[in-house]
Length: 332
Ligand SMILES: NC(=O)c1ccc[n+]([C@@H]2O[C@H](COP(=O)([O-])OP(=O)(O)OC[C@H]3O[C@@H](n4cnc5c(N)ncnc54)[C@H](OP(=O)(O)O)[C@@H]3O)[C@@H](O)[C@H]2O)c1
Image (cartoon, rainbow, N blue to C red):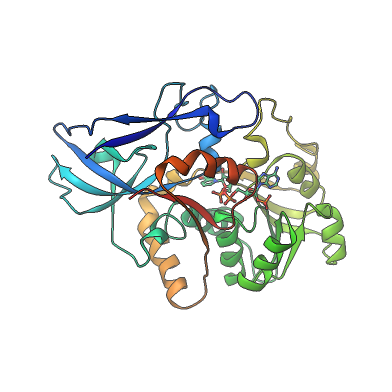
């Protein structure tokens, strides 16, 4: 058995490229007491991976040049020195961009096999649960309200919009390009879509006859957030899920105009969250998402790259909007 690791070779100073990484052969590590050796099956490719490369701490420690790239993965236990896991168990955890990883057992979570297993990283993984908690706990759309979702053809956005539809809302997606907009409406069942590359969000809302937005599920931040702020309904809610428009740059834009003025005048609630805060309720979200899939009320798409070495190019592609649905890499 040989290990392979993807190292952050240097910090990006602006746009990320695959050249910022290096692949390195390494020995398969030995698990110590309370640790588990696992092989990575699928590696999750997340826009946040780019944010973790910045020297500014986020909710995880910054990845430094020379470090194995941080990342979330689905793996299978090879050897366990902890009684809570045994060889063959399917587990998830932040085990990094490596073929074999040793991790403290307390940092892993056991998963029940699902068909297909990739769903454990997509709709039943971090992204599906992010959509579930963000919409159900923070956005809380009521029957007949208008919900707007950015990055709507992406992993989180595609699920968030369908959850809002299930709650009785009118759901509009924002996505880049005609093909993604068609997918959002025809395959995911959103009521309409705005191609922000062909028209501004304001123009799109006007074309659709939408005067105001009750819930904005914001995956993007930046100018798009500013445009939507001006079109929020009184007592509207903005779910601050992510800021992908500002991750892949050395000079993020300042915050939007309208904060705090519009928050006051329109009595808006703008709330950020990290899905990890809801870890004690993951089982509940996964059970509900699985039920929705089984009943044909939730559809999902996955964008799967082949081989660990393809992870850097896949992340670059996601940041440029090349993916539809949940991006991941098949490692084993
Ligand atoms: N809060 C949490 O706990 C949590 C957990 C997971 C993810 N997130 C956040 O959720 C968001 C979506 O993540 P995801 O994994 O589902 O990724 P994703 O939506 O599958 O992929 C990112 C998408 O963002 C869009 N995008 C990129 N640059 C953009 C720009 N400048 N303006 C508008 N859209 C842009 C692209 O789609 P287009 O082609 O449509 O532009 C791209 O496909 C991210 O902000 C992520 O950080 C938050």
